Length: 267
Image 1 (cartoon, rainbow, N blue to C red):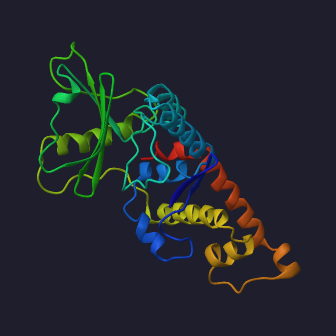
Image 2: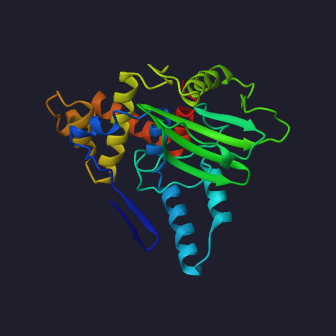
């Protein structure tokens, strides 16, 4: 659900926070998908996106410059709709922000690149001489940045020599197999462990509960400590469960405020 009301953006996740379907909804998410889930819940991002799109609609012009500025501030190549889930509209992340984005330079223009026949293009955008894509190959989401480089005689993988070079190499290995049309089982890209998935899903559900107006006590015993008998009165106010819920809420706000960028560097 998404709406614009006097500049305010309203967004609700398709899986209610109390619903057991939430885990299924996020089951196939990788680190970049979870980063997008936190970003799209950021109220500042929602409002900036609404302002840019409203300005473009009012002037009947393209807001390319404003969109680019907006995207770069949040680690994106182009803005992604706050109401769009990663499965509906995968975010296109800047290569230096996400270890899962594979950069390829070649003598031919990026538009000359043809994805293998067994892959599906689920997102793409052309920015200058760069073409950014997300390809789906089975359960693998391959993120590419294609650049025209006349000095290259053949298409070349480009890996930044930084602290995350080893993680980027893993993504390059998967990209090489996919782009060469390798058959059989593909190597896996780094993905959240079951524990990490449960933790990230819990944080998203907690945020959605707060946005939905749920009381902290309801969140604590409906989401964080579901097997406990709910505490009341002074017992609740002085409890470790209440303090833990406060800490978790702070962590959620930090993740939505910008901590999601760390997920893009996971591997």
